[in-house]
Length: 508
Image 1 (cartoon, rainbow, N blue to C red):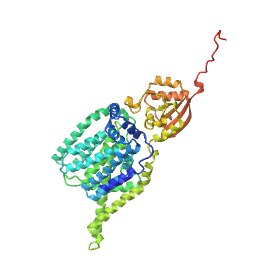
Image 2 (image 1 turned 45 degrees about the vertical axis):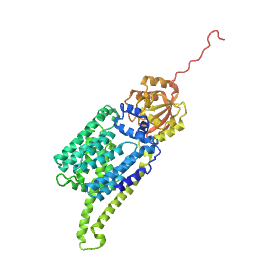
Image 3 (image 1 turned 135 degrees about the vertical axis):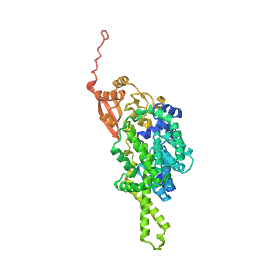
Image 4 (image 1 turned 120 degrees about the horizontal axis):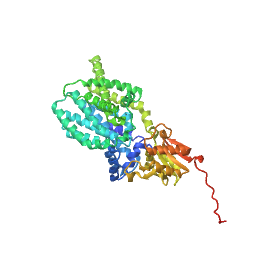
């Protein structure tokens, strides 16, 4: 399906140069610019789950290091996903359903958001959708080796893509598949799990990376549903009604792989399982299940086709005997297809303000380019700088020009040399000693941290806060999207009065 892919490509390229990266993109950017041995060293300590993606982006940024180039793989992957969703709809129902589903995916704000992210999620969605198309082909009598290979690579891009296996198993249950199909799928699924096992074992030792996640709630599930069907009320309720109509496809002959039998598990099972697991060990973020969006739009398109078919049959009964040329079956089919395309265009126009706002870097959790501009204006070579917490050093690693020549007070070893994301810092005692010799220090800080909305677990981070609060006054403050650049000066009363120098006897 070329039309959905082209629409997604155009929307993805629109406003791609936002003029700034946020923290996760900045990690992709600064890690991918390291050498392959340095990336390999990093993955032993942190971010193993993104290792394959970092190596891919390393090759891409070798052509030209820049934020637009960083995001291009995601744009292309999103375009491929829209085309694959269209191919799924065409195979499972008919071409117009594929066209509608692909276009709905392309205009969805959730798909557009991650199409412009320099992270792995759009690529995972492309791999998962491709694996689902291969699953359908295999269940209808094809070979399973390509399915296993594509899904295995996709899981190495992000391990939570393995939840797709559960969705496909539910599809086989709904289809009442035969023993031969179950055998083929089981062998492919076993190979995927075995191939993924090393990544799972390593990533389990790095679980502290997701310690910030919280248990999902009913509101979380509602938010995801709106992300799948449309954030605006008008689009949401129409799509919800059509998706319910699309569930009629659950009925079918035993062994038949219908659109509803594939799309419903794809849309529901991965998010539901991850949310349930997250009640005990929080792991859920909506971007981890972005690939489930394809199932939702397939249900909507299939429901629209069912409604259009019912309307067409009713109209045909009411106009029996009318021989006008535009009332023929072929003409009606083209008119229905065009009506669906126009409905997708209306959905795009309705959600256009959301898509436009998403091109603003201020809609991300932070804007490191804006922070670097403040730092470049305020800092001078030789100025002491403290990053609080350590991950705010990301701005200096991504935009080093603004921090050229400054003294990083807490740093012991740089990020590349230490094989870490942000470098190694001194302990609390050495940090206090270094700060004791300073009359002023610039602090690049997480705004929530310095305002007391959360307390760091690291002893070094707590020591930074304690020294700043006890021994320094805040002199200047410039905040940008959750990150603040502050000048702290030492409290005069905290410093002992200087001892006067008395002349030694006999030196007059």
